[in-house]
Length: 334
Ligand code: A2P
Image (cartoon, rainbow, N blue to C red; front, side, top):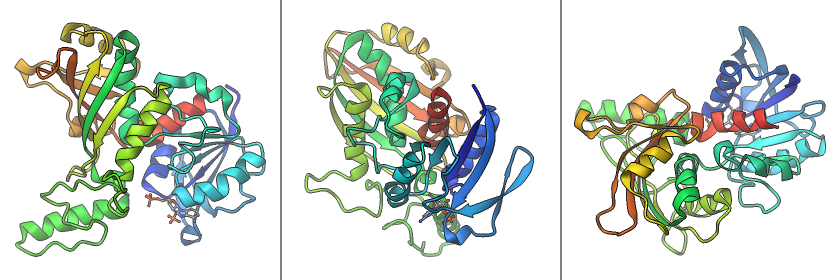
């Protein structure tokens, strides 16, 4: 690959910093790199490949001469600035939800639908973190036996809600252990020693009773898998885990898949690692998945309530495969 001029918009954020780390670790061919953030970050510096680089303020003119821009600076920023970048012949890989369901914008997980990158018009959307790890596992099973229905409940890490949310988890945990009242600023209820079935915590519930995160999992799964007929029901829950989203998944297939067949299919699937030996208490754990790029699957068993049902436990690092790594993999395919 010929070296590219790259920009990272939202470089100072949790995901932005992981994007820099992944570009470095995967030796992405960077000709030059521009780090962009808001006015608040004027004067800040960030490390990249042994150098310390200045953070610049993101403006409409930031993308002149840039070939690839990774965006993780919130939906409003993407809506405003991604078209400016595309206009300047830069390809944007956008981690926000701003463009994901736009029919003119491909929504890509390289292991699932890399071919969709071809029809981009300058913006490619990086899917929702919980959806990415789900479809990486669903796709090979769908190809083998056609998935008709998926029921998923998530156990999502606090790092998915940003740096301030992580600070709140730590402060609340300390307060509770000291017998004090936990203070809530980011979450509407204490997240320490608790589970909150509302993601994102700041959005109102939809009229149908679902959160926007749940609707993202439903709609994005269909778009990435290229199959509107897959029925999905999602319940998304924030749990007091630092990093690594876990998911309990029940799926129903048109053709029966045995546990042994599912094991075999998943052990050959790109980006998937099967960790499934109940006798040895081996199954995926958020603490083990954190810092790794793969999606881990285990507890593969028959769903005893359905003749063609399977139950699975899926875990991945929400900041890596769920965000920064998937974005860099897309950039590698460009
Ligand atoms: P800044 O650090 O200057 O606020 P996180 O999701 O971890 O909170 O990170 C959000 C990222 O998006 C940060 O890098 C933040 O920059 C950046 N950001 C937020 N709003 C804007 C904006 N209006 N223009 C540019 N960057 C923004």
